[in-house]
Length: 352
Image (cartoon, rainbow, N blue to C red):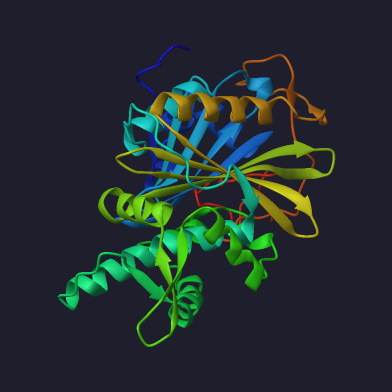
């Protein structure tokens, strides 16, 4: 199979599930086999001008290097696309989502900080955008933009509650799969990272009120996201283990005209996480994503074997242990195969 620039795509409609010619297509059967019995799958969420969408990438190592992308089409349609390997998929994905920046830029966010501190830096960037918009509306020009401390705290609470993907912090929380598992108790000491890395400096108004004045990092990154940020993407890579699936990577990507912000979360126990942030040009980001995907695929643990079907290309296959799935389709009542994602009779997606 060699379609590096021509991935094979099927649009499976509800009415097509009675089309015997379609159901006998060997490529489609192989794709459904991989989707229904993956040893690795990736949850991807994308937020942009059209809202949030979610798709999944599936791989079964016993079936070769093929990966299968499933997406929701119009209505109940399911779009199934086959790629030769991760690299082919990522190249195609990058053409649509990744910025084409060719020169490196400074990374103002520390290479690794606590999740709570990272959330504060995102809100500092959002705060610069918010203050800039408000000053424009009020016909106010200031040499050194600032935000009042109570306002910074209040708007952060509102931002987290909103899940408004037009703002960086809620977009990060909305599109990063699995982020809800972490305990994020913000404390006063967490704000020190903003002062240390020049997102803010201390300031005082003529009235004596203390305020947060945007420093070099706050201004530079605030302007970057104010003028050139439109979308964000979250990944969660899950692999099979002897006890089911386990999430081994949680990633977030925010492309701008200047660079591609790449974020990788690392579990540190007690429902806490550290965040690694890097700024990459296109080639660097693609190289890093390929590395992450390959590493995740290499840590698969042995799973049970099953007898191959007549349409299966390899001589043997692997399947993951059954995980609490429905036994019958809730749409047409047909008995389902173990770990089925779609009903083979009516095509309805299975709700776990």
